Image 1 (spheres, rainbow, N blue to C red):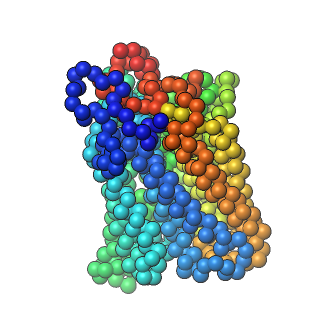
Image 2: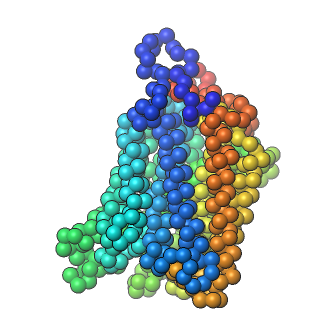
Image 3: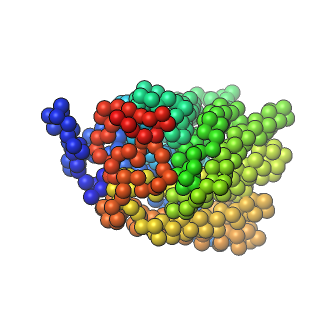
Length: 544
């Protein structure tokens, strides 16, 4: 049976711990009062998949409406609610919690720690997400419907919203608090709980990317909290932060939001880079090329992410000096990103590669993420961006980096570590069906949007002129296919593994894989590394 659904105590109880606390709690208590990093990781992953499905349904409603010109299914007000909530739920409910789930599961295993540093806070930071998610989803049923100001929640639109806006703001506050607690936990765990012999520069790349991401989260989440609190006081307490009538400025909101928002997109991609940097060397059967440069590139991306925010605001009337600064800063951030891509390709170069599902998703990620990176570079040019701003070109760009970036890397990570989590191997055939189905339908969905954007179709519109009909129909069909592939993944890959169906997984299913997580049995026992392991010189194997 699996690590996910089965209860098992400590593998090979030592003589010194005669008390029962070493055995996993059972039944519902195991999950509600979970303090074990593996259980909390599982909870995060299942929660984020649920939210992916909710966000996916909203996306399919958007695509169903846009299948043909004219108003078919929903009125424009509801359409705006769908686009807003799809964004908020996917970013804060699906992608971020999933990466935190990976961090919870894998970081202690990778650095040889017994658990996360603050086990109870870990439980709290997970359970905070549930009421927040309920509030977000329930906002559809409030008077006036869900927030419809776009996921960016721009003023002055936020003044016109009903009570759901306040529920949305409260939900974001709670999710932000959860993120900050998770980050503190990750930082303290990585800095204080590494096994002896594991220096920072011997850590797996996934640990590095998460350490840097956690600092980013702590830096920017309070900024978002500030922006939405000012929105709240503008709505209810007579302040005028963003209201020109009282001496405020709606553009100030955009500055504060995007000072959070741009680092946020790197928060959603750096852990993905970490996962890919674990998988590519394992299947190329080579060491990661340029480990130190990968660490420096990740750090430079994080630092530069704070000085590019206004590239989202080229059309707000900023002085040309400002446009130039943000344009050059944005072009500069593509350099460390390219360094990472070159390093992955160099790792694969002349490697003895095999293409199991994790590798397929990793290579798929590199292909499609690079495309998304290039369209980002095009949008960085202020004169081009002014033409393409708020068109479907932008939608194509950020879905190429967020779906094919964050989501594909997570699929790669799931296939890579699932044998360790559950103790059973997934079906390779099903994994390949999921990969090819997802890759093809993803491109059918989002590639045409580049052309729609170049031809001038605006984003967030419920209706469009006739000339855009064909490409929209293609995109909608692709989206339905993509959604179905993710349902297939859950029903035919994840569920069987959770139920313990499938060939028994060896301790190290991938012969090229390196790292401490492969030093523990599959499925990973409830308690691992209770005594800090002694490591060899590479810090990838346990010797004592």
